[in-house]
Image (tube, rainbow over all chains, first blue to last red; front, side, top):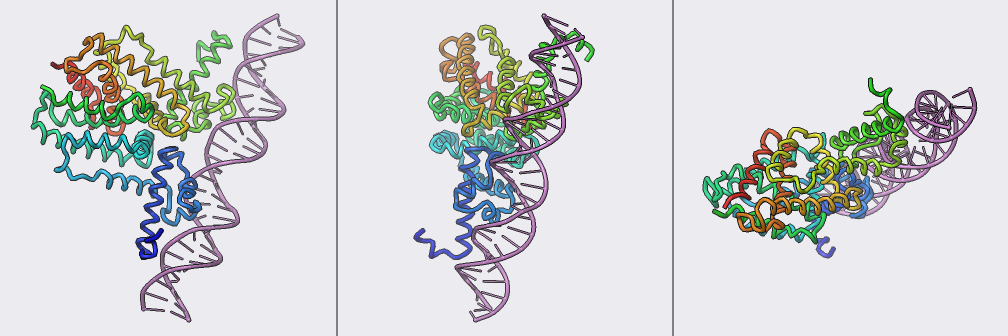
Length: 191
Length: 191
DNA sequence: TACAAAACCTACCGATCTACAGGTAGTCGA
DNA sequence: TCGACTACCTGTAGATCGGTAGGTTTTGTA
């Protein structure tokens, strides 16, 4: 790369790690975490499997880096979220199937016993539900137009987003994910 | 077993196969399909891995049997479905986490490439969406109280069911799956 | 009771996987 | 320029995987 010469060793190493995480994202999307071999990830960045282990000492360590990447991904301050931004997020997601596929596959695996991402997703959902309840409260107050509280609506909102993703990933032709999500939002907003 | 003597060979064989499928259900719930080894399933029914292959010649053949079991599971004639039965189904599911875990794990895996259950889930969702649209139409006619059509509501209904399952499996203490689903139904039924 | 088929088993193959051990070439600061 | 460190590599251990080959015991049947 042309700007590579300007990098110091630390930046180069960080860039390499980022490359590896990106490759891991892809391989997990294709094969799931259990099905993703270190060798497949390594090959994608021009390393041997053992070379990869120089950057991430175990497979689990690589997964942790992938999950941290995701956290960074949707790190929008709570105060800045609004309902209509959620619709935009879903639309944006519809343009990035690879990412959605990665985390849908991981979510599915994570419900199995002793899966290394299980605690991550459990904590994440608790966080996201609370965050969504806050968004709903900011929009509608303590009661939605339909009579439900933000706290009771938040799990539904999250469920719709996730559930639509699976249907859409399996059959994008038949499922209009952003449209369906907007339908759900109008459901919330009605009297 | 006491009634075993009364079985003929064919019935015994069928019973054995059913045992194996049940064991496979469990192991898949614990480790996913990719993580489920034939040896683990075999051990659970007191067979060697090769003994199991006598009944199901390949791992994929066993998966097919598992999926067929599921089809049989929720084979309720369309005409008999009603909205309130869906709520009961969710309540029933909440008492059988193992089954839910099996198929949630399988669904998650199935979005990866060349997964042997991918076509199954794609077809199943098309079928279930159509079926749900029918149920909604029978209940509400061509327009739901909120103005949406049954066809546009069906994907949301399915998404909520699936999405809630993941949240509930990860954290049953925090997520009241049947309650949340009832909340969603009231959302549909309001004017 | 003889024969065939069903219901297993042991033995094994080749592939794949994560991870460890230890070596080597290049880089970089003192 | 020297010594340490980074960034890899080869080699390999040790386990597990799905599946094949071919045997043996059990069982049902004619």
